Length: 205
Ligand SMILES: [Zn+2]
Image 1 (cartoon, rainbow, N blue to C red):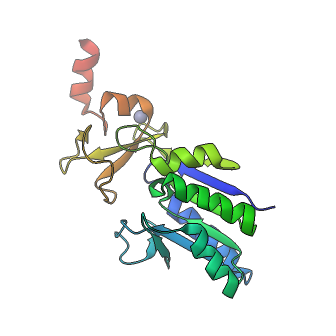
Image 2: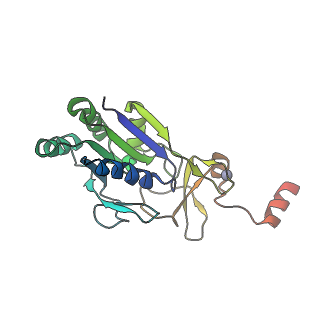
Image 3: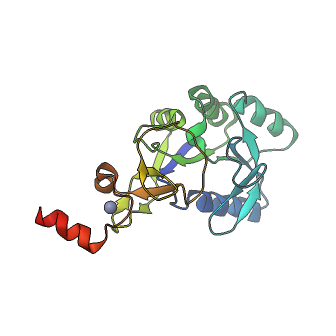
């Protein structure tokens, strides 16, 4: 039976790599997986999902106006769609998450959404919030903080590597602009290990 999946994580957890691997498994079986990603993410060039390991794959894009259900229904009429993968699913609107649910329920096509859970201020993204409510299957992909603990938060950095705490929710950037942190270091605003001298001073204080 088809399900709606939400696989979430902080930045740099290898989400896109997992998506591309899962999609490849379908290709290998002669099936027809369809992949979509957010239009605003142009890091990979036009209409591509790419991972930090260097893999990439062409993808359709969605923007605010895309009706995901109509798009897949049309495609499915021509050629059977076996699964829909959605990267950057945090950028789906609530309505588009409902459309994904209809792809599952009405067309019986599994939908696997990959995305960030929270933004750099620790707030849920619209798409992620709706997916947390609606998905049949929710899974966390692990990322690691510099301290070695599980990273659950995504921090946005200045070019100098300091943490930003205010700004637009959406600002697309690569590894240099974001880092994933455990909650403790996110709350403390420590995007990286302090130099040993500073750490000593702190514990002496
Ligand atoms: Zn940490």
